[in-house]
Length: 270
Image (cartoon, rainbow, N blue to C red; front, side, top):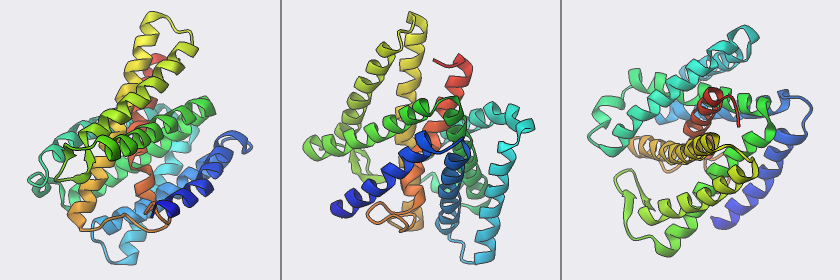
């Protein structure tokens, strides 16, 4: 499994870096991210236990329409609203994760899961594209925060993990792993903040937003784990050997990207 994860990562990371930094214009990245999100939309329908291909394709099509709509110039002014809706959704999701499995009787229903899938995927893609347009470096910064939180949690959890973080949702995650991820990303955040030569207020805002982004990335991971546990599956799909499905790769970003994009927009950049 570890070998497959490494091989897949060695293939995916260069593709992501090329799309972010070297592809001409913003369209290549938007198309690449859009493809991943649409695969994630298809996988979400499986987590809702939908069997009919037509119904699954319809939901995926609705997500595609949402992506196209949010790329239209005359709708760009709605993007901050979309980010705010996403952040509000994640504040509610915290409670669902904390009180799982009791909370499942409220959210594990098609009328809740359908709009939840839309709120998960459309704002995330919009935020990623927005940050890419602002600067590929800032988009990569969000990626590094998510990867750093995941990497720090993995190694700290393996070495020190004893206390379960959310045993009913994701038994493999530990408090020690979470702390390890926060420590690693905090070092990254402070280093970047110092390099930006920000004034005291901007420095504090940047560090605070970045730490909240890290916490959001953990929530994104936990929420998808909760939905998969309710659906009785280990992975959302098998498109990436050793890594599962598209949702398994972007679950943290679905929470982290809109939050960071909203903070960036409010602050007017850093």
